[in-house]
Length: 214
Image (cartoon, rainbow, N blue to C red; front, top):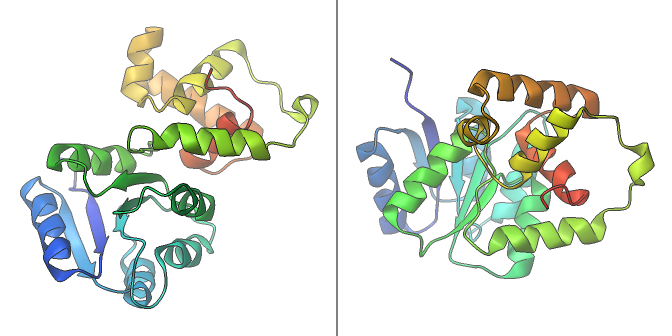
């Protein structure tokens, strides 16, 4: 049996925080802590190293973006799913640029939320429908690196990268390309090495910057 996904919940509203933690626990996740401010989030996160951080942006001391920045400062891979009432463009972009893995609006249903946590734990970039296009547009706008500077990828690596950029899981990519999930994972690892990237989130950003999702 595999160990349950360990989750840190960060939200300043006690009832909401407790409800999220309860839903996660009932679904088989291990909630290692549920805290109500950014300072605690950074301290507990660094100490316990959760598999996933479920983070609200509106906190009483540090902002959610500041929490993300602080956690990601050590350069190790963090999987952070923002769960916020705000769908404002700037909030979404600030969170993703700081290092958030995904962004979900609080109006999402219970099953949608639980699935988002699972996919985040798997390394997927998860967004409320409509927000992924927003992020994509911004990264395209900011893209400045000449295409000639890009490392040479094989046709298969490029094909896998395009599907990663569209948000497909390894399993979905394997089914689409009639490959084993292990082979897909190997292609992703090879691509990470060529591009000198550290994790799948950085890979998605690379792909979006170059419009490889089309």
